[in-house]
Length: 263
Image 1 (cartoon, rainbow, N blue to C red):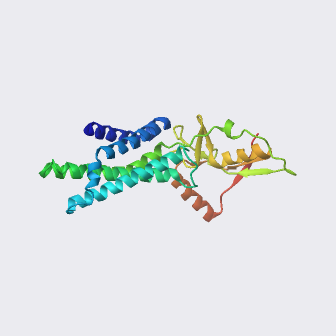
Image 2: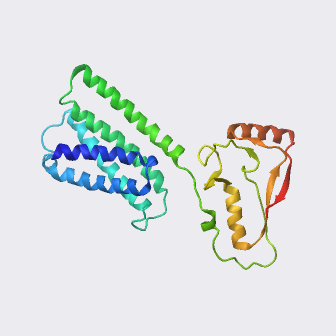
Image 3: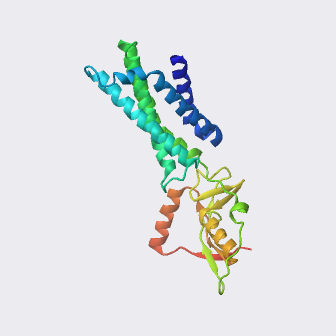
């Protein structure tokens, strides 16, 4: 029973780490089952905690205890931040997504260390050293790989029709909105998305600039006129190249633009 549960927990943990490749509902369900499984794991191993502080402490036992405490704290933060993101309770204002990702990285490192410590009982010599190196590589991969995957698979998608719905404000006089967006001023390739391109979001297959979206929200509230700043030339899609080109233009005072009214 214990071995089956441990294997299931390990599988669930890695399913949870694959959140970028599954729906939020599947990720949430896997997380809930994992937390329940962790509680069951501790109940089945309650004898371990009865002797948690008894006896002597060699280096291996001390590291094992510290790893268990660190893993338990990481999973607790993972569960709380996940519940906050899923809006199971009214959470204080915080970047819960960053907290959740950080807890995922921390718990992954702790889990690998915990598995390695237990493996040292049965694996010796060169095999153990190979397992240690593999664990280290996997832990480093988790620390740097998870944020990378999160960055490159977390697209910014919006539904303009839903966002712009609502009553207009009654303002005195006329309101003019002038904005600048990379969309319309940048030579984006056809395959660029709201991850590989800076300041972009997607409404279906349509690319929208962040500033453009804000301008449209204000227009929907005020019924104002909107003008988009259109540069005289189109800039490169690479953000670094655009920054360097902008610095060159500022130094020569040669940047030019025109205003185009949006219907």
